[in-house]
Picture (tube, rainbow, N blue to C red):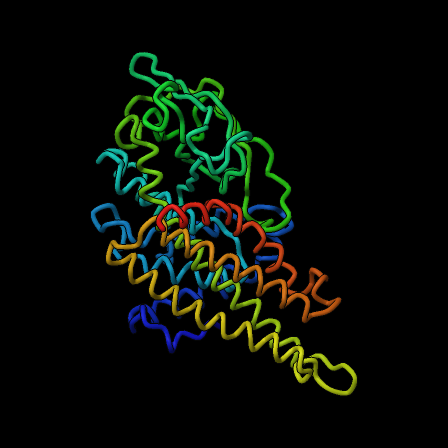
Length: 380
């Protein structure tokens, strides 16, 4: 269980909310983790259960059926989900997609989609990455060509979280291929549109229960009114939302690192070797002591970053630095924790194996560690 007594960013209301989240995950998530890993997708029933429990899109304003809370509530859910060892895509819906629709959507778009996103009846995705384009979003080749009062969307996307479940996809597409970053727009595509096809549920190294898919758009016609925000402003919107997206990943990484550390402490205290517990060997104690000090610093930094984000002051460079630091820390901790498990750590029956597998992609998606260093360096 995550220890929150020394946290500076949460108050009693948040502690009560965290307790509710834990109890819900204990009941509705943990018993299903192994099955979801095998099936490669989280049940739609879990989404609606999350909606009923008030765990989806808590920051959406009350006028659209939301709770109108601040990002700290998202962070609590992010932490508890990661600590539970789950890669369910609910955080993408709450931390990323919801804000795009709230901040840039028309009144009609908000009224149509937000209530279902809050209830879990609508699952969303955001389609940025393409087979030939990752971190360089200006290089996307998917197009949304105007034809009368419609866009005709053509192209393909890959590595899309919630791809198998999604009812609504925010597609990053070029509405003006000759205008560079100013020719990129965000277009809403409903999954029941003719010409939209889901590819395979991708076979990944980790995060197996997160449906991650190829998506194909074969001249999909959508109304011009499906443009999210202003045409040609898509790249600017993407850049403005990156601090929260990367902060959310950092929060999850820190909680995942803590879970791996706790698993290592538990295992080494219980496991005997050469007449004593593995924990009593100096190498074990030095390793765990070093990791604990880094985790202590990490939690202090997470609280600072969340507080700064609540004030509207978290910059793109600071968000990138947070993602870089915490995902790299997560990898250091999960790898050391697996090593302390010895051969048992390589067995899938132990939680550390899943935590190790799932952590690897954290340094890649949302912007690779190398891109994060470049973003931070540009601010120097």
